Image 1: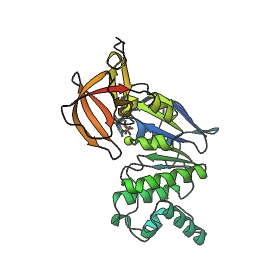
Image 2 (image 1 turned 90 degrees about the vertical axis):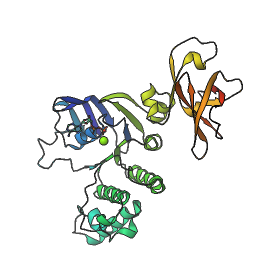
Image 3 (image 1 turned 90 degrees about the horizontal axis):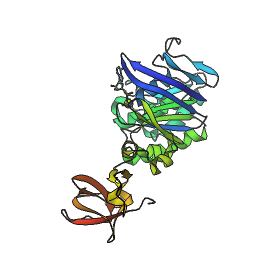
Length: 317
Ligand code: ADP
Ligand code: MG
C-alpha cells in the first residue's frame, strides 16, 4: 500500500506541491486531474523517487521510500513510471523493447510474456518493427507494454493516452485498466481526459496550483462539483447567478451547471440569445449569451444564430 504523508515540494524557490497526502490500496486506481502546471507530473515523479523530498514522507506498506538521495539508481523497482516522453530504444525491435528488462534465463516464458503484452496493447503485428517506424501513438503503446513487463505493483501513468487516436484509445483503455484490476496492480494516472477519471478511477484528486482542492469518488465530484474549476475539468460548464435560474430567487450566489442540465422550455426562466451550434454526434452544444456572459446548453438540433431561447434548469439531469 502506498502512503504519501504531508509532502511539500519546491523547485528552487517555487513551491509546486503543498502538503499533499494520499493513500492507495492494492489494485486501486487513482486519477489526478488539474490544469497544466498544477503539479501532476511532479507528484508522480516524487512517488517514483526521482525528486528528493525534504518536507513529508512516503511509505510502501511499512517501508519508507527514501528517494534519489538514498538509492543508487533513482526509481523504486516495484513501481513503473510511464513518463510523458516514453523512453524507447530506437534501433531494437518492439518485442526487444518490451522484453528489455525480462530475464533471458527462460526464453520461452519470456517470449510468451512479450506476446501477451503486445496482444494487450494491440501491437502483435508490429513485434519485429523498430520504434522509429511507428507513429507516436504506437510508441506510447509499446511503452505501456514495456512498463508492465516486469509486473509492477504500482503503475504511474503520465497522460498515457494523449497521443493515441480515439479509435484505439477506448479499447486500449478498457483492456489496460481491466488487466490492472485483474492483476491487482495499483495505478495512478495524471490526466486531462475526463473519461479516464469518470470511467476508470476509484478515486480522483483535483490539484490546483499544487494544492489538493478535492479528493473523492469521481462520480461524486462530477455530480456535486465544489466550484467551476472542478466542474470545468469534466467539460464545458456554466456559472449562473441563482436569481437568473431559480424562480422567485433574488440571490447573487453563483450556481455551477453543466450544459446537459439546461433545457429549452416554454416555461423556462432564463432567456438567452443563441450564438453558435456545435455538432457533438448525439446532440448539439449550443453557445448562447446572457447579459454578455456565455451560457452553454445541449439541444437535439442546431438553433439559428440570434434566436432567443428560454431555458429551464434540471439539476437532477
Ligand atoms: P503538470 O504535470 O500538472 O502540468 P508539473 O508538475 O509539470 O505540472 O509542473 C508544476 C510546476 O512546476 C509548473 O509551474 C512547472 O513550470 C514547474 N516545473 C516543472 N518541472 C520543473 C523543473 N524541472 N524545474 C523547475 N520548475 C519546474
Ligand atoms: Mg504533466
